[in-house]
Structures are given as structure tokens and as C-alpha cells.
Image 1 (cartoon, rainbow over the protein chains, first blue to last red):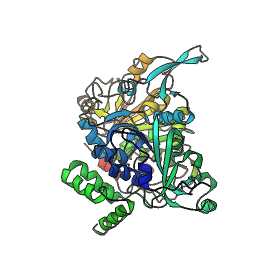
Image 2 (image 1 turned 45 degrees about the horizontal axis):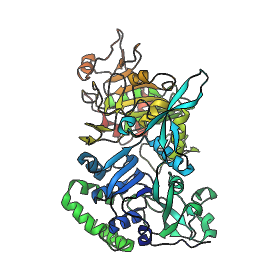
Image 3 (image 1 turned 90 degrees about the horizontal axis):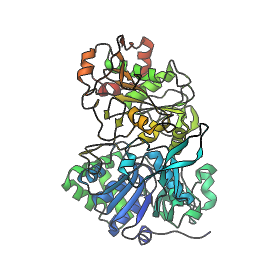
Image 4 (image 1 turned 45 degrees about the vertical axis):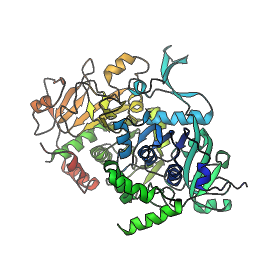
Amino acid sequence: MPNKVLTEEEVVSEIQDGMTIGVGGWGSRRKPMSLIRAIIRAGRKDLTIVSYGGPEIGLLAATGQLRRAVYGFVSLDSIPLEPHFRVARQTGSIIATEFDEGAFYLGLLAASHRVPFYPTRAGLGSDMLKMNPELKVITSPYSDADGEYEQLVAIPAFDIDVSLIHMNRADKGGNGQFLGPDLFFDDLFAMAAKKTFMSCESIIDTEDFLTHGSVHTLKIPRIFVDGVVEAPQGAHFTECPPDYGRDENFQKFYAATAKDEELWKQFKSRFLDLENHSEYLKSLESFRESQ
Amino acid sequence: MRRADICVVQIAECFRDDADILCNPIGISPIIGGRLAKATFANEVVMTDAVSVLAANIIPLGDSSAERVIESYVPYRTIFDIVWSGRRHVMMGATQIDQFGNQNIAAIGGYEKPKAQLLGLRGAPGNLINHRTSYWVPKHSKRSFVANVDIVSGPGYDKMKTLGAPANRFHNVYRVVSNLGVFDFSTPDNRMQLVSVHPGVEIEQILENTDFEIEVPEKIEESRLPTDSEIEIIQLIDPEGARYSEVNDE
């Protein structure tokens, strides 16, 4: 078994300005937040994020490191619209490439399978095509029972340089295990990217996987993973069940910073301008004590 | 009788014939209405627990620890597969809706740099082109029932006419339920038509609060009142009365 264990800083050294980063999870659920905070610390800029968006898009927009967001939505779940994303859209500070939620899945799938596109009906008749003039409508090469040739939208494969995902458990070799209710699309993010880095709540021995969950939870094989980072509470403040739920208090605090420049500065110095993930956990501890 | 309870029953009525497809209401009153249908006159309806499973039993609104009788596992990826299979009836909200049923939940004031960013397209484009869709609008006004939507998230009948066959064959905007009445698109040119008026609402009130011409047939029904047992079940599903914060009684 290879040893692919890395630090957050080693992962970020693989990310350059201008890259396209795929981020797993869904809204404010199981996001690789410790890796996102490491990108913020390192000051990488002109980034494109591809995700079922949550706070990674809001944070990188607020720090000015995000150039473009490619997404099915950008939400904090209990707060339906990501507040920093709202500001970024209404001030026009980022380029937005918005897909129907299901169509987004096909962009990931096409990249995973190394085909240029997957066809879908989604988008026909709606403004998705006007919002994304680069999207092409194609004609099926096959006729239906009535001899008609159907028009379909060709969702292009996402071109992702690096994907970041967060799992409940992993081994040193890069096999990942999810223990919550939904894998979301993390296996596809891992397959779709040129390189994938996975953080996890804890690194365990391979032979212990099945004491944590059934064989069905082992959905990230190491052939798609280039590095593993052990990051307890690495998804904070998003949820990571069954290890922990969403930190709603913290999320509310974060959301409030979108409307208050002074509060944002405080948030940034307390939770982003830090040396590493263990400093973050200490800062979080004092935040919780003050609540 | 509170208006919110009448609305919940009319939402439930939208799902009456949906045995063996996924009944997927989104939002407070739609979820209460869907669960009411399942608990009463549409037992065979299949519903999610709003997380990742299909639950055979009736779960109180927002109760994440409620016991579930799990029928099947439906993570988000499977939901999209079900959308594309067509075996689903979704009820979504609409910040704006027009006479042909075009819905906007994306943004107000263009999409390059919107005046107000809303939820986004979400799953609306895929929903509308693949299966039956209904809408719930808790505040019927000229701001929600508009002459033209700013952005088309879910396409309506005029867009489908332009698109033509075969792409339009699964499109079906089934009902719109608002706090004032129930509407469908059954005119020959598929424009919005009044189906029933909620008790306590005048037709004039609907017309005055709509920024386009609604078709009003000669005979108008009044939306039915909830039965006593329906009220009891609604109370079990929504003991905190979340529905009353969504709908006022005027």
C-alpha cells in the first residue's frame, strides 16, 4: 500500500493561480473546508471553482481569490442562498456559469468518462441556454418511433485541474469511506480531475474500514486519489455526519459577515489569517466558549 | 377555518392521482400537503424524508429524529435519475410566474449582474422538460403573478410550443396553488385559468392581484374545506404551525 499522506500545505503546493478546482460535498454538507482555508492562506488567485456550491464559493469570492464559479446552485442549506455569493453576483465581481442541477451532474460524468459531453433535455425552453451561450444543442443521430430526430443539450465535460473532497475515514493509500447519508458526487469529482486530494476526519488502517461501515460505504478507490490529509473537523462549519452536524451558530456568524465589513474583518483575522488547521481548531474552541 | 389549512388541502389534491411516482413537494406548505395526501386519500404516493430515503410513514415537518420506515435509498444522484425517468411530480415555489406558466426562481433584473440574486435555476429546467410540475405561491400579488418573468427557470407552455415535438412531450404544468385560489392551464392555448377560489376570497381580489389576464370560466368552484380528520392530520404533521407563517388570512 502506498503512503499518500500529506499536509494541507503540501496539497496547496499542487495548486497554481488560475486553476480550476472541483470541490465535493453539497451546499453546506461535507465540504473540504480545511483545504479551502489552506488555499485562502496561500493566496492562490484567479481560481475557478466547480461545485454543488456552498461556503467554498462564498469564502473565495469574499477574499477576492475567485474569478469564476461553475455550479448547480450555491447554498448553505439552512440559509437558502450563500450570502457572500449573493454579494458577488449583485456586484458582478465573479463570472457565473450556472447549470440546471442535474445537467451539472452530466458535466462531471462526462469528465469522469473522458467523453466530450453527455446529452440531456434539461435546459431546452429555459434561460439556461441564454445564460451560457457556449452550450450547444445537438440533434440525435437516432430517430424515435415517429421518425423524429430529437434536439438535446450537450453538457460539456468539466475541465478540472484538481478536485478536493472530504471523507469520514480514509487509509494511507488514499481509499476513502463516507459514513453519512449521501456520497453526493465525490467519486465523480475524484474521477473527473487531473489530480484529487482527499481530507478525512481520521486515517485508519485498511483492515478496519468494515468495523466503521458496510462495504457500500467504500466508494472512493485510491486509483483516483493523489494525496490524503488527516483533518479532524476538516469540514467545519459544514456538516459531516455521523461525526458532527452543521455548526449552525458559526454558520450564522459567517453569514452575517456578508452584510458587515467590520464583522468580515474580525472573521477573517480570527478564522482565516491563521498558520494551520490546528490553529483554526483552537480559535474555534474559543469561539464556542464565548457563545 | 384558517386559509393556510385550505391551501394545504388544495396542495394535497394536486397529488391525488400520483400513485407509484415520486411525489416531491419542496417548501413548507407543499411538504405538509404532500404528506397529508399520503396520510389520507393517496396512500400509495411515494415520498422522501427530505434527506436521502423514501419513507413509508408520515413524518412531522422538520423532525430529523422522527422514526422512519425506510422503503428505499434515494441519494441526490438517484433523484436526478428519477427526474430523467419521468416518474416524479414536483411542486416548487415561484418568485414570479406568468400566464403560460413560465417560472422564475433565479434572479431579478437580468443574470449578468442581477439586482437581486435569488436561488438560481436549481433543478427547474430539468424538472419541467421531464415530468409533471406544480407551483405553490404563498403571496399572490402583481409582483408574483407577472406579465413577464425576468428569467425563465422552469419553461411554460409558450416556450414549449416554440420548441415543438418531440422535445415538449413530457412537459406538464399541472396546477398552481396560491393563497387565493387554484389554477391550471387548460385553455386551448394553455393560458392560466381559474379552477377554484378559496373560501373567503372574491374573484375580483384575484384579478386585481394578477398582472395578466386570467381566464375565468363561467362556473367557478369554491376550494373545498378541510375535513375534521384532515385538520387533525395537518396538526400532527405541522404541530408548530409553520404553515401559518407562510400564509396570512386576508
